Length: 226
Ligand SMILES: O=C1O[C@H](COP(=O)(O)O)[C@@H](O)[C@H](O)[C@H]1O
Image (cartoon, rainbow, N blue to C red; front, top):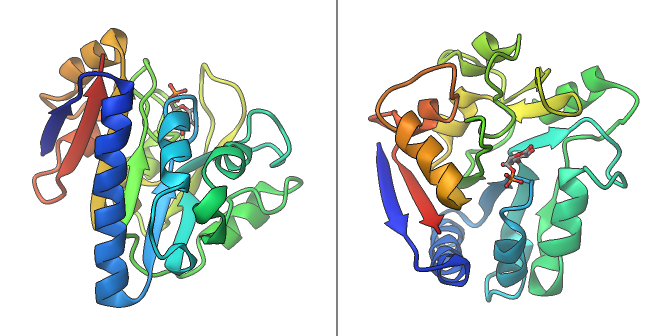
């Protein structure tokens, strides 16, 4: 179920989110010794990454990975890993341990094998959303969507072919997102708010984000700014 936080503007959302994220990760570090954070790419999280990179946190005890990735080399301008390296893994957060998803740009199979190796429970997944209703790289009408949305899916990551967006993708599966201890969806603008309103009432494969918004046992905090 979703818990909506409406912020006055992007700066207010970034401040509120940064405080909440630091508290969540800090709590996991106190309880378990380490915290696991999976972040999204795209344009939306840049200001948040900048703010977080300077936050006071025991960053050497934080394991950061990606919710999804475009199948391009990390040096490619479209790489989510590149974005995270430029904006999040800076300042204090440069001490975090980062694991990317494109570990072999020549082989999707090798990347998936690496990405699906056993790992501890994720503390927090920070999701974004496209105006087409995708989240992570769970794109509407992608041929792999049934396996990616299968609630019994044991894999954490699968390959996804977006019908109308560039690059083959590697995406966290719905089952893995729901196994994370906490989920946040961070979006901005009137168009995405309208998509959220459409997706919130019921699950539909036309808007895969609806599957993370409608899970009674796995609540999600949605942060939105105009
Ligand atoms: O392709 C992607 O898009 C979504 C949304 O991106 P934005 O630029 O509209 O914020 C993002 O959450 C995802 O990680 C990315 O791969």
